[in-house]
Picture (cartoon, helix red, strand yellow):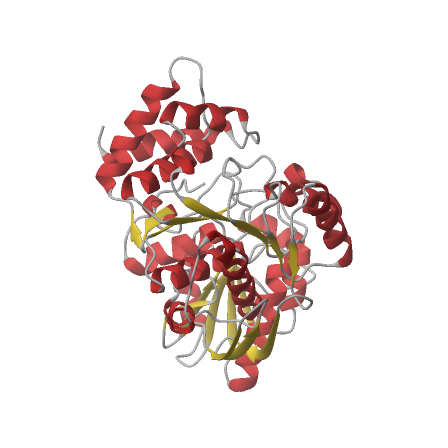
Length: 431
């Protein structure tokens, strides 16, 4: 099997959709020899912020001298972005070899989903690569997510907001319950900035499982409005003058969750120094989240796709406009059909000067015409572009050299923008 044929096989599995549950992944892990127990793990769930928190946690651990696996989703351009060891993507040859191995192990009775295949691949690759610690981002929810076959040193729930209601429920409490499913008996859990309803639900699950809970603004705190300069006061440590490479005030909260998670895992032998914390946060890279990818005009890409994430984007744009009063903002927006279009754009109202509506090259993407129909009252003078490439050409025509083009609404759209900028053709199926 070649890398191309392996990835083609994996992408074809996406037609079966999402099937939450642990029976198949548990059986597959057993046939692999339970590779996930050969190294320590940290497990991170949350509606928003879990990927950034995972990236920061891994970066600090690597700076501390650990060999670190990082499993995240989705990818932006290259499938191999999902599985990394010390920042290096899994090799194409490894993807091919592991896909073939997993296919054989699944016969005759197991039919894993795309995400179950990739999760098993990640766990096996981390074992073969001899990682000390694997940092795992939950794919969807938590309780029935394929990553939930580990017993971690500690876990975290970064935020709770309405998203994926078809799978997780329609209330913050029901979504919190699904994400609290990653909490294991006696394993510490770090909680980010949660509202009262979500926190009450998670506290109840943690109490039932006798899991120590560490809460933001109670057990650990931050001071500072910007990731460029902030302080952290934790369970046992205090850091002043920290700098994080990721943009946006919300990244201060994510950094706090990462540092609290590392503190919570200290009794299991995880040790990070002051120097490694500072180096790890300064060096962290997490593409597609408030990321400036070009200049003159500036192009900002952000994978926000729900109202809570849109509010973080709006906060960033507000500060950007204040810092550059003459700068105009051209919004390039594409979203999936099942997302809250009106709720997403409401925080952006009044912050953008021109709007280009477009669509992602995926069957579940809303068309530009559908977006216009649902957002007409908000963005009456919007432009229509049938593809991301057309949208970017139009946006560059509308923007002056000192203006800002903001591409948002979907991580898939951000991935297409990365591919467009690189001049490469992105596969239409990402997961």
